[in-house]
Length: 166
Image (cartoon, rainbow, N blue to C red):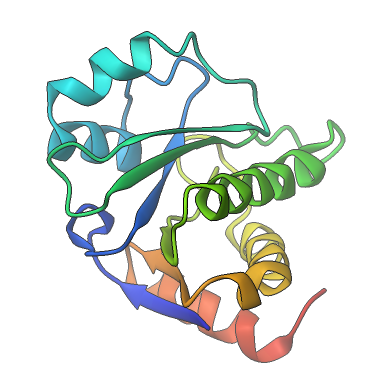
């Protein structure tokens, strides 16, 4: 089941939360900074040992002080107008996050809207990509949550789920 929720992703009692990470995995602004702050300094120390992560891929770490057992750090693309494989890279980071979660036994997972903050990806297009990948994996999880920061983002995901895949 795919569910849309307006919440602070760092408070969700799910098996895995996804971090909209940068390639260093060492924290940043937005949801990335919030996850690192809530998880505690152990997360940054653990991530430093991973050596980064390329765009379109994902890495998994313990949740440390978070209610979630796992944090999956997915690196989405910076938006450059759509001509630099952005859609392919964004879909890939969602797929890689879901594959990692399944491989580690996660049954519930929550995603932020990857790449739509500082990376500038258009929110409507990002939501369509996210939902289309989530639908492919829906049967492998008890629940996939699109965790939205704002009411407007929540409505966008709800509308996208009603419309269906692009």
